[in-house]
Image (cartoon, rainbow, N blue to C red; front, side, top):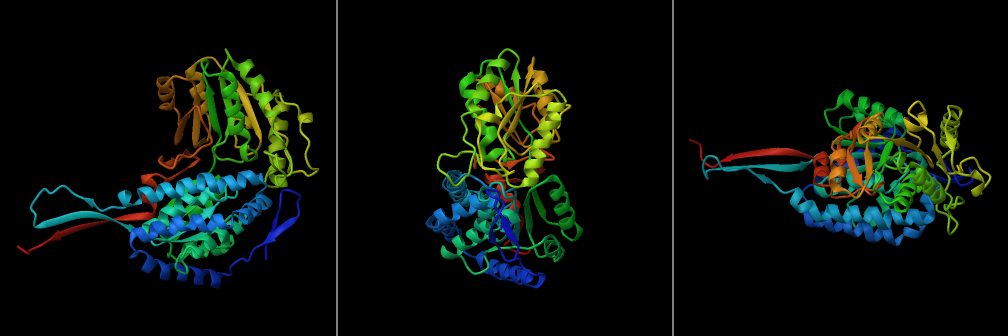
Length: 464
């Protein structure tokens, strides 16, 4: 059985059972059998199941959160908060809008009462979710709950680093009363996943991960299928700070956006562009805020910054910083402020200034507790710098002027524009990206479109 190596100490912490090709097909068969009945289940029953799932997961929250922390290094309070905050909020919101969103669309009667026309929303069948490790509950929840509410069955292939979260979710649904096979942990390797793609038995695939992984999944699914594929592939999210933004409050929010989850957030702030009039003051305030963080064992009270997920990830982060410094950047924070366990996955948080776009730290995804700060003179320059990226997930604008924020936002090549906040998903809004951040969307009313297909009805009462 594959072992999960904890970033806390580099030791194996759990094991999980990987499915053979034959067992994987049995799981797919079970999903199809469950879905045939589930699609005819009243929506009110589907809503009750999803709400009951929350109660059953909460009953095991202490155990589940500790598993998450040991598997990927998130501070224990943050692991608990991932469920009690965003996971519950998104589930409840999707349940709230399901009846309105999944209703039949009646057409305007252009002919006669003898003809009835409408568009129904049918489930796509079996949905496969390939989920990333960094937010192991928040990554799958939008597609998972939308799919179940729409009448689908779901297979959850979680990243090996957090594989047991798929088992946690399966158990919560089963204890809530889900039919056998409706929601299943689906631990398969890449070749077996490719076989399942080739079987033409999936209705939709949702993938969250790297750009390279997204291309591989997209090619594999497209080879023998004409089904939807949703992709969320990361970001290099920018913050634009205008001169009227209050420096101290802005600094607190920017640093939290950069360091939360050890910087391992697709929509976390990785680069800050600040007007030259306040650049020195904001940089100093951000440095002071970084120094308030406590780096350490994420199972200990008071720690709000844990290790990054693996030695490989830590090495990549340190290499980006070293390259930037060699090219003229300055590390403005003091590494001596932080003490941590003697293990390579504990990366000290750093703020770099004197940076530019010749450095990977400002153009390539870092995915760690590091942020670069760069000045600008005009809003046009800030927009150009923010758009100078292969990614386009989110961007944030820091000002007290609604009109300026909206005007700048209209010029930014991203899926979500924030004003005076960051690193946040609003369940009422579409979660989507452009360029190498992917395509498709989850959450909001639009998220249900991915897990349903339109079916038109033209019913004429009498034959002329």
